[in-house]
Amino acid sequence: MLGWSLRRGTTELTMRPQELLLLLMLRWTKAHMEDPAFPHLGDGSQTLLRACPWRCSCPRDDTVDCAGLGLRVFPDNITRAARHLSLQSNQLQELPYNELSRLSGLRTLDLHSNLISSEGLPDEAFESLTQLEHFYVAHNKLSVAPQFLPRSLRVADLAANEVVEIFPLTFGEKPALRSVYLHNNRLSNTGLPPNSFHGSEAITTLSLSSNQLSYLPPSLPASLERLHLQNNLISKVPRGALSLHTRLRELYLQHNQLTDGGLDATTFSKLSSLEYLDLSHNQLATVPEGLPGTLTILHLGRNCIRQVEALRLHRARGLRYLLLQHNALGASALPAGTLRPLRALHTLHLYGNRLERVPPALPRHLKSLVMPHNRVAVLGARDLVSARSLAELNLAYNRLASAHVHPGAFRRLSALRSLDLAGNQLSRLPEGLPASLRSLRLQRNQLRALEPELLAGLNKLQELSLAHNRLRVGDIGPGTWHELQALQVLDLSHNELSFVPPDLPEALEELHLQANRISHVGPEAFLSTPRLRALSLRANRLHMTSIAAEAFLGLAHLRVVDTAENPEQVLVQLPPKGRGS
Image 1 (cartoon, rainbow, N blue to C red):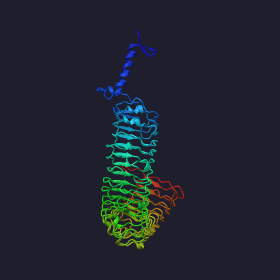
Image 2 (cartoon, one colour):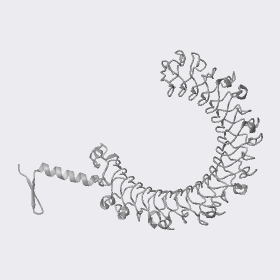
Image 3 (cartoon, rainbow, N blue to C red):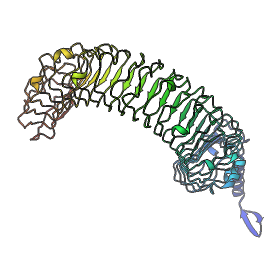
Image 4 (cartoon, rainbow, N blue to C red):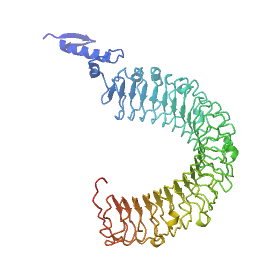
């Protein structure tokens, strides 16, 4: 058959007509499929012919997903129609300018988790990406930010790189920019020029945490609503640095080096929308001045605060959560009336201080008082009377002895659901426990007896911990468990029990008896607890013949029995799984 002859340079190519036609069709398809104006074929032919890089997926005409393929080279054959390109979690070290710049319609470029250096990210390429809105290049190896990013940008994520410098047009002059993430880099104040965000007056979220900033950067956008500056070296907030930030709702300054001298009365006073302020893990000796009335959460834990002045909290009447744990608050640190203005206060954390009494005149709507690991040795009749709405009271690991807990200390707490008195020096159960209790923790005290009348009326109690005391079965009075009809979890571990206490509550599901002196389990030991699901008899004095064969009959829900660390290995035959259990 006669062939066609074409000259190309000095080489003569000879093709059959069919071959030439196929070549022309392939060239036409490649040229036109990369043209955004290429017409859509209703019969699906375009989808079948549309180019998609090898191993990548293209779920839509405008989306190319090449994430997590271990790519070392930028994929070719990406259609110019692409609007969303994902190359995250690969091993790319650089992006070729010619390949990137031709994708002028991109709106999303995701380069998260690669090996891209600043040299491998050409600034010129972004000049063509005039529609780019979302740019993700976190977890790479950038040492400086791109000098120019498109004006169309809405979200920029450069976190977890090695960035030491950004430039005026990196984030400046971006009227649509909303969120900038620069945390976990190496930025100092010299690498963050004052005009870094000039002309970008729509930014609401800025994260600069975990850098090397020594003072709060000036000239931050007044539009900010969330500002993250934790884990830096900040020792000072310059006067007026936050004076224009009336929209700021969340400010994170924890884990810095702030002292009282680094703040002044105007630092926070103009923040008329501020709701969350975290100043924990600093070196403050006092509560800051000028706290705004909009503040809802104030975190001052892990500072050096010795006293709380009432005037410092006077304006913060909307405060709901006040966290003062691990400071140096002593006996006179919270004088009467200090907390009274905080009428909306819900939670007060005073964990790990040197307080000797419960703070007087607690706000009447307080729901949670958390002050374990203090030096509270006395609980008077009126110490809690103003906080009748308390639902949670934690006085664990203080110095409370039974003789210094007034019989009426808890009597008026009709909403109390959780009471933690673990780690004190109580020798008997407290009197006047409210009927509303759901959880009572008394482990690690010096209890020697359980008196039924002190547990009377606790018919809503679901969890009772009496571990690490000195209880013997003979010290548990008859009828002790009678009114605990809702009790589901009972911890009697680490006591001096010689056998399973009788007449346990019917609703019981978990029973902890480990580390006692139990040497025998009789056939009637669990007759009163048909709903038992888990039982621990670990580290007692049981032998192979110590447990009666009938002991577990009728326990259709029992699924866990721990008998380890006894003198002999004890095998327990669990009852067959009941229907519906």
